Length: 103
Length: 189
Image (cartoon, rainbow over all chains, first blue to last red):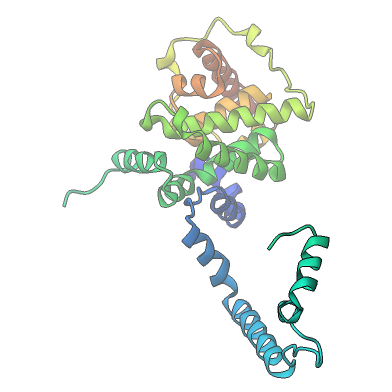
């Protein structure tokens, strides 16, 4: 018999190499990640998805700015401070007295 | 540049592995994965479970490399972890280790360590199929000892360390295993 027992034993299990390779890789130590590495790891594997998502948000924001009118003051409604300022002095003091505040 | 011999390369890799360098671990484990798997699979006689045990062994080795005292003993240390995992498997699966207490029947005819047949002598006398057949029939303790002797050429002292039994026990187990092998061949012929 030319083949050694060791070789025969290893040959008997040679079909397991692929699985063992995967097991070995899964057991290797992982380098510690910093915040930059973490963000890179987060972004790079799915950068297209992240880019599309960012573009979609930009589009939504732009449409909102363009389409929706900015809130206009209701006609006839005055600013509260202007209203107070226009009151006669005695009425103004009375309101202050009622609300418990001082001038 | 002088050629790098295997032991010094291994020492360098182990030193790098202590620093958790993935490439060094990859090299070290790649070199041992098949012999280790063969040992575990033949010892517990369950190929699927052997994958789990090899994975657990690798993970434990990476995590506990600090417990390795001598870098030059990395391989026997790794096999020692696997051996303990195998014993755990036997305990948890409640499979009985046949004749694990056989060491009480140590023959008096066991000579000193020098009388251990060389691997080459064994190889010259046996055939592969007969070896496998015998391996399956051997009690687990003897099977484990014979596998370590054949697969990695561990010394008897190393086998004693790996299996956690006294040197005399290793000698007797190996002696019984080889005698059984011899008897089987004589019967066949």
